[in-house]
Every structure is written in structure tokens, then in C-alpha cells.
Length: 291
Image (cartoon, rainbow, N blue to C red; front, side):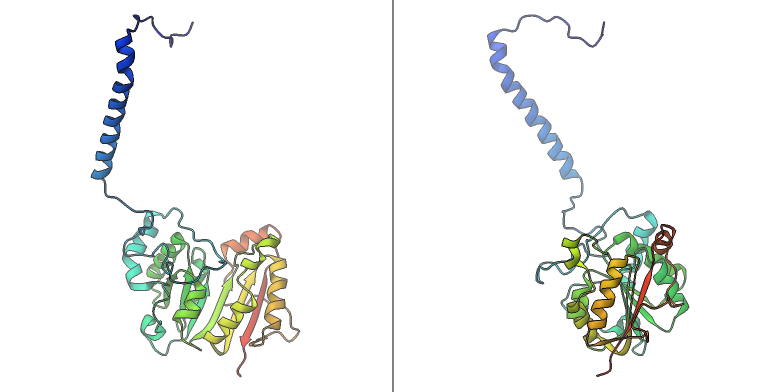
């Protein structure tokens, strides 16, 4: 027989029945008051308040730019202690929010007006970016992403490896290109393993589209290299088709096809995982035409 059974009790009077709801309401009110008091004693943090007050903002462009289909999803997932510390210490020095409210002086940002600057859109955890920056200290890398752990990781890698040619941008790369960068200001553009949006109804979200290429061409200097890479073959075919039709770009490959992976692009962990699964990685190397 279970020991968790009710014990017999005395009969309940009519007065006691009438007073029960009032007593329960009073008890509930007391609990709510205690909870409210405890919450007031804790520092409040609004839903839109930044995870790091002096670090990357949750939505730097806010609502002052038009609503449109995005090619990315902001990801503010768990940040490790080391990544968080890097964001707190290094964001004011090497980070910037893409707010779309001011023009960006790349020479001032990197501390060298003569430094050629390449924009990298989407850098994951930043290992490949740091490796490329270390191998080519004469080129600045403006690395753009919305992944908070990756931002912190790249900042930490830059500090540990003494890389002064990396800056991290937080937010929408379209707004960065359109609102904040000057014409012909970029020496190159890198888009490695962007979200393939494999479902047909989501293809409109893919980054490499005619409109994007037209915008990018205005910010790339003549002769600048646009380098894309993907392990999603249908997306690679679409990239090749769209880039080949873009009037401002020309394929560096004489046969008009894909390019072998250049030595300056490291084999990333993500790429290695794809290769282990039998994926085929395609590189596309196109140059901005000199008109």
C-alpha cells in the first residue's frame, strides 16, 4: 500500500468554505509580491539590451533601414568565457557595428591609408580568416558576420597571433556595402561557404544574386578579386551562372568554369567535414572589370 495517501480530516464548516478563496487569494498575492521584490533586487536586462554593453549590438542597423529578405539569420548562441572576454576587451579596439549611419574610412579603421582591404562575408569561427591574415600581413581583412561566438573567437585569435590587420564587423553586409563603404574602396571580396538555402522556396535568400553583384562591383576597385567557395553543388552552378552573366565581372579561368582552390584559401574545418562526407568543393574566382 502506498504511503503517499491522504489522511482523514475533520469535516469543513460553511464559514471555512467561504473563507478559503479569500485566503488563497491573499497567499497568491503574497507570493507575487515576493517574486516582484526579488526581481527588482536583480539588475534588469531588456530583451534588446546587448549581451556585451561595449561589444557587438544585437541589431546595429535597427529599424532605420528597409525590411527585405535576408541571406542570413542572426545567431547569438552560447559564448564561452574566453570569447566573451575577447569581446569585452577587444571589441572597442577592433570591432564595429554596421549601423548604416556613417561612412567608413578604411585607412583610419586599419591605421594605414595605403593598406589594401579585403571584405570577407561570413567567417564562421574565424580560424581561416586568422590564417589568411597571418600569411598576408600586407592586406587588411574586414571580416563581417552576425555570429557572436565567432566574433569573439576571431578577436581572440587575432590577439594571440599578433594580427593587427583584422577588423570584425557585426551586422548586415548589404548595409555595409551600400551605406558605409566608398566606391572602389575594396581590394577584394571573399564569400566562403555561404548558407546554400537548399529548399527551392528559399533560393531567393541566397547571397550571390545579380543585385548583390551589381552592388559589390561599385565598391570593388577595378581588377579586384571576387572569390566564392561552396560545397553545395547546385549553389555552385547557380553562382557560376550568375557571375558569368554579371557585366562587371570576368572569370579568371580561360575555360569559363570553376577554379582550383588557391593556396591563400586555407582548408577550413567545415570544408574538411564536407569532404569527409563526399562533398565536392567549388571555388569561383572572378575579377572586377576595368571600365
